[in-house]
Image 1 (cartoon, helix red, strand yellow):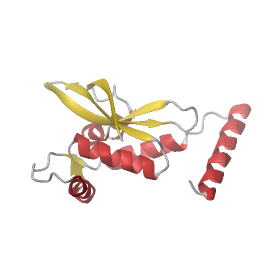
Image 2 (image 1 turned 45 degrees about the horizontal axis):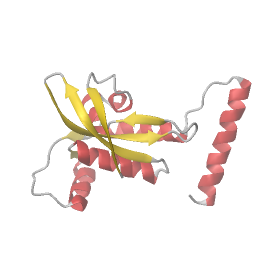
Image 3 (image 1 turned 90 degrees about the vertical axis):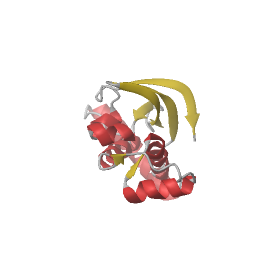
Length: 153
């Protein structure tokens, strides 16, 4: 992180503490702000599975960004990349997902809140179906997630 970014984070930490002392409510963390912005952005993407001939990871990432579509692994990898470019610690998660008429393997993201160090859920694929709220709240989509405990970076 550059000096300006560090100074900005220290300033926001001071503002949050000051508002907390004054009873002014909670100021969203930079990580949460990033998640909300990404959720809005991923709501404009389309969940789709590319032809299996696109096996090279760099080609798939380029197509996901360019065409604004991809499968759950593509979208999760892009979300991790975008969280990290904003300075937020994030990991991809592989797990199991159940929805109304089926079940299968799925990839989503967890990111760390820079205020208290807690980890939060983010599913860009859910945003493509259920809008921004689906990406941020696992209960809003009606999907049931089961984490295998596998993280990828």
